[in-house]
Amino acid sequence: MTAEGTDLVLTLSCPDRPGIVARVSQLLFEQGANIEESQQFDDPRGGRFFMRIVFSVPAGGLGLDDLRAQFGSAATEFGITWEMWDAHARYRTLIMVSKFGHCLNDLLYRWRTGSLNIEIPAIVSNHPDLADLAAAYGIPYHHIPITAETKPWAEAELRSLVSDLGIDLVVLARYMQVLSDDLTREMSGKIINIHHSFLPSFKGAKPYHQAFARGVKLVGATAHYVTADLDEGPIIEQDVVRVDHRLTADDLVRAGEECESRVLTRAVRWHSESRVLLNVDRTVVFS
Image (tube, rainbow, N blue to C red; front, side, top):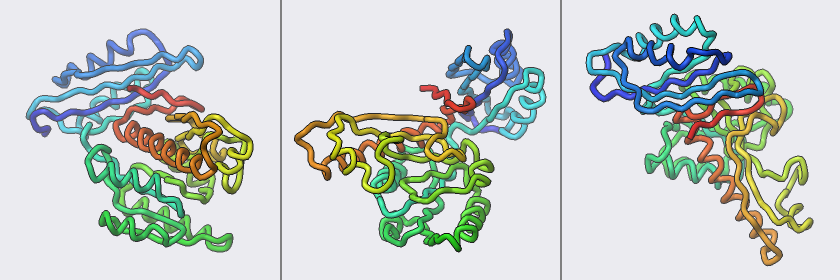
């Protein structure tokens, strides 16, 4: 049974047709639910309908598993793809990092202060450099080195952690290794990456120094879901910062790192609040 004041969040998508809102509202009404917030989007490009609803259920009403069963059987009528979560349940999040710690540090700080709806059972890295940072927050740090020969073993270790720890979300906080196509398919919509927004320009090492050499006037970052197409998955969030001739190459690096941290944190926050819905090669992000 649910406790008094329990809030749940329902997200759904389906082929657009008349009556979806009415039917979903009726289904919730039949379970005694009170809709507290509702947002929707009709995508004319693909003919799909997207919706996010926050609702509460009365004390003594159906629990989450029973509500899922009730809604699932009825949703089949409209071909609805959906998820239902406790609105306050924290997403179990595995963070992966290499040697750059700015994004990891920002996520850990915001997790510690309670501004992100996540738990962090573990941090994984292919380098030992940031183990002390993880230890300062009391989070287990798994050093899984990777070479061409050990990559299959390393990914098997990662899969085991995801399974054993009940991971809902993987965040690549400047993790400088490419995940296999099989893993990205298995966790479609559940792996978030961050990178600078210069791509496809300035690839490879020291992109900010390359940008400085070209005299760029904007520094930015992109957070996206990971797919088999490297750095080309559905975009969740982006931001830019204006720069000018007074900045050195190191200044550009700092500006870029701050932008990356902000953008990744927003993407993680929105995902963990069930605000992001996949729309083929794009996303719908409800505010």
